[in-house]
Length: 220
Image (cartoon, rainbow, N blue to C red; front, side, top):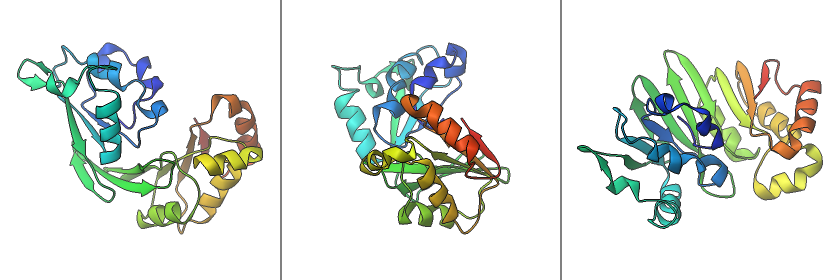
């Protein structure tokens, strides 16, 4: 599973117990909000421990500010039988992890805090999630290094008229999203657009429907 936002709470307890690995992109609340309760719900699971993968900066913020005994229990020191509930695993940009038939590679992207996207290969298919980021040289270079991409997931948080906000917070607008795609040496087979801010969602969906950035665009 990539990230642990509020959508994670939509899973049933049985579904939560099937999740053994969580890859975090960065430390912002909308990407970690459900992690504490999700991990606490792992008591009684047959699939412990749950391993949380993240960069050093993200792990530091989690351990110091969330799992600190005041905001939430320090779950990595707690056990359910012989196994701990939680393990933290530090990852580095460029690192590749082979896991249950998946090849997962972290790559650095530009955001307001240290952030990684993830490339996931499985049975000849290639999925890439670029996380929260902005169009620019770094994103272009990282995506071009990954070669052919079957499904590329990019964010689009703000409408074009809020470009100044997008640039300050390191997020995408429809125009920036189009610019990012145009800069690629190879186009993905499919584009998924995510992270539409709720206050901007209606306007963004209208813009993306009127001017799809890719011939196979899915707005999530």
